[in-house]
Length: 223
Image (cartoon, rainbow, N blue to C red; front, side, top):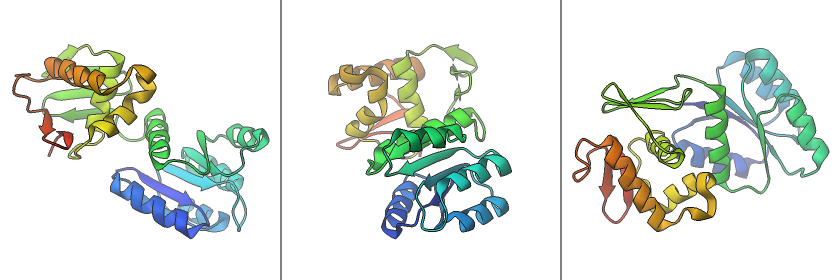
């Protein structure tokens, strides 16, 4: 479970984001301002920092600098500042990404997962029921033998493995794989790719036990 420090002085944003991200399986800690955030970074271990550039106490740039200097923690800026200077300044300081307010929670979630993958925090090996994925190398093995997936099949498999035990609706899956094939991804396409993925990873594709269909709700991998 990745631990995230949310540095934000708007309590409604803190409450809403904390609830949302915890429901997605993250461990969330929070700080209201610059000084409190830096103290927490020095005394705790975090996998990612979400920080607003504008804080009542200090600013996000100082928090970013501390995160990079103290523990090389990845940083995503949350900012209402859409001006180019703020964005460039943050990226030049070592931030990994930024999301402009107001943002969609699903978009932020996608950015978080992307930054965590790039930062290689924790193991890059994901294993479940004889399927092993090395996300650093982009390779997939079934019972010791390598299997070859298309980009969209691989992305779909990662979505399932990153949400073990969670029932994923078809709409949710379409959102998650949209950035791979854009406008070509529709409900029929999803059906085709779930079938193709099952053909490659299931022992008996006609009676799937890895990617389970939850009737009327969607699909689930793992318990």
